[in-house]
Length: 418
Ligand SMILES: *[C@@H]1O[C@H](CO)[C@@H](O)[C@H](O)[C@H]1NC(C)=O
Ligand SMILES: *[C@@H]1O[C@H](CO)[C@@H](O)[C@H](O)[C@H]1NC(C)=O
Ligand SMILES: *[C@@H]1O[C@H](CO)[C@@H](O)[C@H](O)[C@H]1NC(C)=O
Image 1 (cartoon, rainbow, N blue to C red):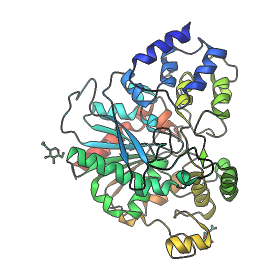
Image 2: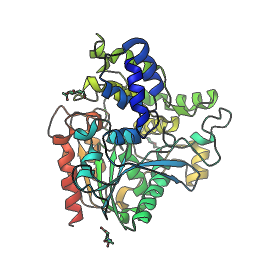
Image 3: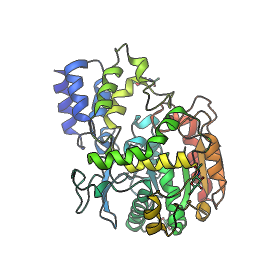
């Protein structure tokens, strides 16, 4: 009965299903009907455009095709709802999500807490990217992501997201608006891909008013976290497994992790403390609201290529930030040398504002500080003062507003007045 009610309300909204809608729905119906609030379930079932329109914000979906054929979806909030709520010649801000995630990173905790809504209210034209291979960008002009006999669709890591997807999205937005520059916000892997773009296509620095890095991932020199150390040795195994089994995709669709998550995280489940420590997330968020878990689970993971994970594995093992290691022969063929070249960050000349936290286990603060010394432009460091703030709090936390939103806005305005 309750489910019917939910279904009726979803259909009147604008969007389609979220990545894990079918699973959330199955579990809600079979096991936990009625235990979560309708509102949270609705957030869990609908996709990002649906979510945004559910909260009465304007939303647009734009698709762009990269030069190598990937069809990417961008989600736009062109203006605010309560303030600055008329279309106009607003400065664009582009937000890029973290690993295994999507544009949901910037809206998932609702209008009061999420960065995308805040920026729209402050008068910006907000654009959210989706990396090739995720739920919204799992499309290509001629390659099939589901073809198990040909993995060409999945032959990319975050290097291609940085060097091809980001420039394609940025040029599209700037052309459409007739502007020369925009702000770039990147969370975690969203920061990685900005750095890659700056290293391989330094001319794009000219198009950036400011780079706001939210726990941007790059070096893993100082990372002593067990989970990071544990995945690193499997980097080569992962690649071989992937090729043998015909799998190029990692955690894309509904899967066992999602099912376990829902079982453990319903409101009245005695397992709820457990779900706050899901091993893969490794205590990486403290401020999360357990009641919101169905919403997180509906939207993440949103899929990526195995190579993205393997590339981080290489960075961890080699303690360097460099291009994808294709083996001696492949490296010689592609890079003209036996070992992959390091990313040179000195061409990143736009002003950078780096937001990070001391308790972040996935992206260690000393590695963020190391990265910041390599940038070619002016850098301002904004460590989050709260000592409990960790990695996923940047997008999933319920008190992000006072923790770092103000600093992002301050950094953007400082850069605009440079
Ligand atoms: C729109 O804004 C841009 C940059 O903010 C400015 O260069 C341009 O002149 C503006 N265009 C109009 C029509 O106001
Ligand atoms: C957690 O989320 C629920 C549902 O949105 C809300 O009612 C509650 O106030 C939130 N708790 C905190 C601490 O934000
Ligand atoms: C990283 O790889 C280079 C070869 O490109 C090698 O000389 C170096 O020792 C490696 N570093 C580590 C920490 O394994």
